[in-house]
Image 1 (tube, rainbow, N blue to C red):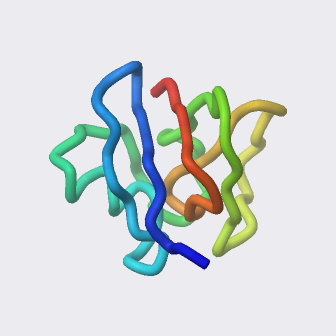
Image 2 (cartoon, one colour; image 1 turned 135 degrees about the vertical axis):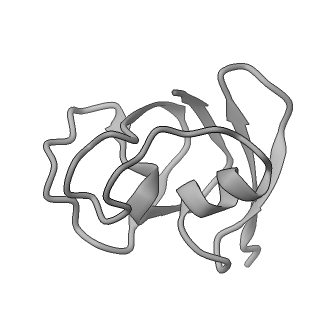
Length: 86
């Protein structure tokens, strides 16, 4: 089973993200993507992104309201290749 997935943000190039190296937010930051965030723990919802395709797993259950089709990158990791709008 692989831990590395392709992640595309806002139609940009595919990024290789290793799900064992921290949250999705941390992985995107390593790729120099500027993301909005405040709490880094699923409390505020500032990092909310639209999940166009793929699947994530929450490492911490978010306290912020998460609408169907949205994710909080600060407290999840990919479980498949992802296509996001942020």
